[in-house]
Length: 83
Image (cartoon, rainbow, N blue to C red; front, side, top):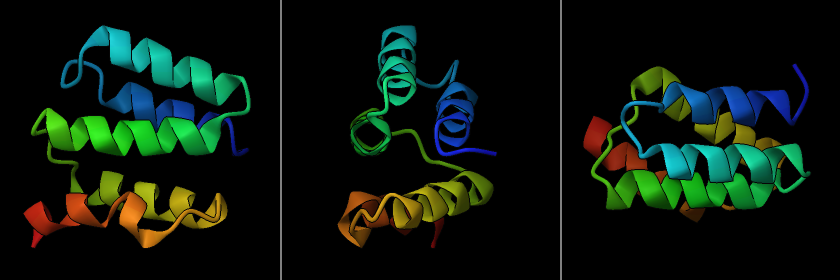
């Protein structure tokens, strides 16, 4: 799966747990080659909305973060709820 499809699928997985407007915005960013911004925004919104990613979702977030050369600070605050 390519670097655009993985983030968009991940973002869509949060449908029903995040407002549709955020889902649309972050998918649009990813589709316009702004995957890093999209992932950063997703992580921030998950935290602000008290949405706890599943362990599988958190693993995908970590993998995408690594692929996009984002720092651990992009997502590590989400993992605390899974400990």
